[in-house]
Image: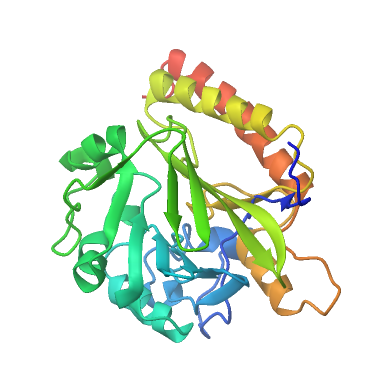
Length: 307
């Protein structure tokens, strides 16, 4: 991919956070810090409360530890990618304030896919801000079904009413920021990716939020996900420095260091040091690992070892 201004492309492997709250709890033996948020500490509400964190000039992490919520400030308001779920919605709203922004200025809530831990907070945040909520047609349908999240939503976690229907190739524009939409099914029927330009000390990078982080739903879902991974491998074949912003945290043992480990490295970063999340090798390795894992998943599903 050639970019006229030599915008280095990156794919953030971000489960970013600032200072982790002091806890007695921590990772289980053999478990990384990044894995702990969806592993041994998945039910520890206090452990999940991660301080908001500035990742790039125009990219902040404002979610809990178990699932990402990304905040993108623009010249005409705020864009939120995903919305977490109860009991963390008020915490997400407060985190937005902590990094210096008014949640009432959120203009778009862009969902990556129709699972409860991503859409659960959308209704409350939409009521506060009046924001448009965007998702693909396939996942609007999927999200409306009670089984979409694997369990019935709790009060306050209801799916938002169908609003902005995003299609392949769409651009969501707000002020000086544009997000390019692509759809890669497999994790859900219509998982949505968002590509946009982020800046590190005013240096531009192309950020990519991958909306469908893992294969699911047997042979059909696995086959769809494999095609999506192969598409990403072709799409990013010529990209110089991709950074992957993953929407579902600690689902995979990320090669090259986990998300929270990278966040700690970013906190220690000195002037002139590379950005810890700009990591071409780890992004390409993640795609290769996901491809191999999905091939095995499909084989197991065909053999009846996975339903």
